[in-house]
Amino acid sequence: MENQSYEVKMNGNGIHEKNALIGVNGKGLNGNGNHHKAVKGIVCPAKQKSCRQRWNIRPSEMSINTLNPIRAIVDGMKLTPNPEKPMIALSIGDPTVFGNLPTDDKVHQAMKNAIDSHKYNGYAPSVGYQKSREVVANFYSCPEAPLEAEDVLLTSGCSQAIDLAITVLCNYGDNILVPCPGFSLYKTLAVSLGIQVKLYNLLPEKSWEIDLQHMESLIDDRTTCLIVNNPSNPCGSVYSKEHLQNILSVASKHCVPILADEIYGDMVFQGCTYQSTASLSSDVPILACGGLAKRWLVPGWRLGWILIHDRNQIFGKEIRRGLVKLSQRILGACTIVQGAIESILNDTPQEFYHRTISFLESNSKICFSELSTVPGLTPVMPSGAMYLMVGIEMEHFPEFQNDVQFTERLVTEQSVFCLPATAFEYPNYFRVVVTVPEEMMVEACTRIREFCQRHYRTCSQDSNELDQ
Image 1 (cartoon, one colour):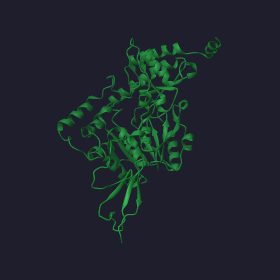
Image 2 (cartoon, rainbow, N blue to C red):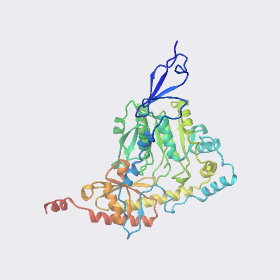
Image 3 (spheres, helix red, strand yellow):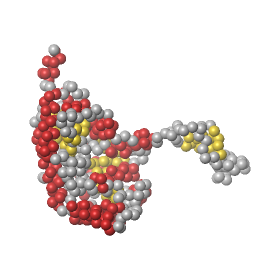
Image 4 (cartoon, helix red, strand yellow):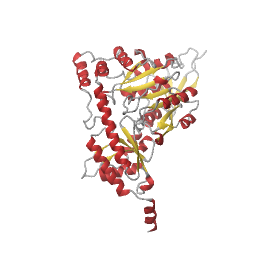
């Protein structure tokens, strides 16, 4: 029988379409034995390297679809500080910026020892050194949620951990549930992969607890992941045991796995108790993401992890294999930090953790107390992490259409930069980072008060001005 050739067409989206039939010998050859393909109507032998007549380099669909909401908002703002006042940036979630929150000496020494050993200059397995995984497993294992080395993947920061977790659980066209307000990276990663983001509401009047009824209403057959961020960025909330159990009940009812973003785990203020989501789960499989960045105050060291909690084998071998394969795309986390991780986790003194938390709590109380008496502002006292959210009663600031304009003018007049909460999908709030030195926190609150006093208008004032 005569062989039939085939051609491969590329449409505008770069999708391949097969036409005709492959020859019965399975080689897809034409009569003279050469492969042929059609590109833009031109048939070229496969031996030819290229049929292009001109340059036509286009960015990938994934790169086009990748957008960081924070950068999109901030880059569009007109940020010209008042030259008579030094800039106070309360917008950056990096505790090292001002130098007032150094990591512990033992953490530094652990890194020095790892370097001096000359043992960690080569490649490690993409999932991390076995010994380092064992150390992390032992540190976070508890009777309610036991862990072994095989349950741990080391990653390049918590951001990569979140990336791997979303990517392994979701396909194009699936959807994930994301807190609102919430960390912008979730949406950045999901949308770039063609995954729909459904925002579930947090309730400021309940210290940013999840609106469980609203969250549950968003679940459908294509929901493949529920993201729970506790303690929270940008809210600084810490969920109670009861609230976490209610979240787990919804996930269990609808058979939706949880991605637990716990990068701020154990960073809770006095009187609050942190409990990992996995320690309360009896059946819901959980990928818990964490890292060194915040609790140990070394975000630039880029060591994170995924803890696989799957006691009922719902994830099974497939999800684990998928995570391993995905980790092989960039060959894993920094080897030197992996070499230091045992000493970092086991030798850091409790006083270091206590000192850090005490400072963050003190600054949070200063900010909350000062801004609570400012007309037109409604701060929400946090219970952990390093952030505080402040509501803006926009009706009393008629000069500004939204939180972006409000915070933009705050920079212009007072040289204080707070991140508008539109960047977290939550307009008419702004986020304050409480890691700055105490005297800077006090000065920033004083300037915010001056700004609000200048622009605040009562309803009667608005009416009188309109009448005039």
